[in-house]
Length: 295
Length: 342
Image (cartoon, rainbow over the protein chains, first blue to last red):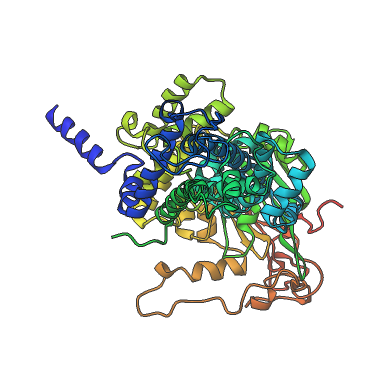
């Protein structure tokens, strides 16, 4: 009996959880861990915006127009007397929901297209990938502007535009992984066992290509934040009076000499999640990269 | 009774420099509960032949003629979809060379067994899991109740090949195609896997096609053997007869080149020359440029030789035709002309 228990313990030592090795490797990357902490902080303040924000995002106060940072208004107020700190917090909500929605849409569509293209090969691959090339040949911002001009600016419109503009990136990553995976013996033996093609694609190929795709997701989230902010900055993004970090930056730029806080704080606010996503993405890429030598 | 009848099967690959007939009008039967070996050197078409049964050929390859009849169905005429639904994994399954790559790394072996069992047999997950444990026990995995929840990476190569065999046999197929199943394993494990296959073939009443370049493997477990050269099945014989009285000059040369048959001091015999380029195969017998027993004009001209029955061995060689080889004294029994019936 006791020997059996001993063997049991041995097996458990030999086989740590599937995420153990991943965790070890990732946690060695200090910058990535910092990014993850920063992101966690941003997510928490965004979720708790209702409780943290001292004012409403749209409440105007003509007694406190263009006031600098103070105890009452930690980031100052804008030309309508709105509290910039509160607007940044609620602005995060909007920019995060748009970006995450858009990137997830691109992730879903791009991954499906890429996996199918890589697996089937032949004319389907050619057809899908040439379509992707066409989309890729437009700079994503220009493409986004054109699409918005067509469907009109709205919150979910921007998410949709991001979804379309980023689909090719996911399709390419998924396809390249799918092509090499399709030649693996285990995919072949699944076919031999009579497993259906949709099941092979979704249940077997997808989990095996998830690593590189997660890296792409994090990096695209960083770009997504920037693109969303850029669209707002250009006036075709989130429409006033909804708080938008890009638009706040644009509003502040003309009076930066008189009210530096109006553009500085929204600018920093845009920068923080971009840094967080980029550092996490780099960390994940190093972790997932099998060529990386770990000591 | 024949479980699988292959008749005049040809497989052609389209290449940049013209068509390549990798399998050329091959005819043979596999009997019930028989282990049939297919041997030949690299590029002779043996793997292509194995892949063609389930239409697993590469994109540029296709069955260009003949039939593969299993259980009343012509596999060569079926669509991919029909094969996936009715044949693959269910009636015919297949195992490959590299067991380490034959299982999905992100699922436990139990999940993969259950996936195959529930796909083909009318079983719920719980019953399928019990069957999976039984199967793992059958193939000699110790502690199957615990090991079933392990991922493939925690098994050794030999154990993985046992698991792959368990998956292949999970739905009681009538035929198992084993494409070089022991090539990546070390010698002692090879012998164990071969014993296991032999034992399971008997207990599950499964016929096995054993595709290999290793005559040792053939000698170990096969009942009958087909020797392939340049896309032709040049000789088919019961195992003992093949080793005792090889008929085709190629088989004779092949047997002479087995290291074990030579003393330490003798040089190893090698077959001179190279296999032909199948895009431009030689006229006559495909083996004639390397053959040391060319016996007449027919060897070097025209189509490939007919198949002769020589005391129970089917052999594609003019040596056994008194009309071509004047020195031949036995009876001439043509069993198949190269063109088949047409």
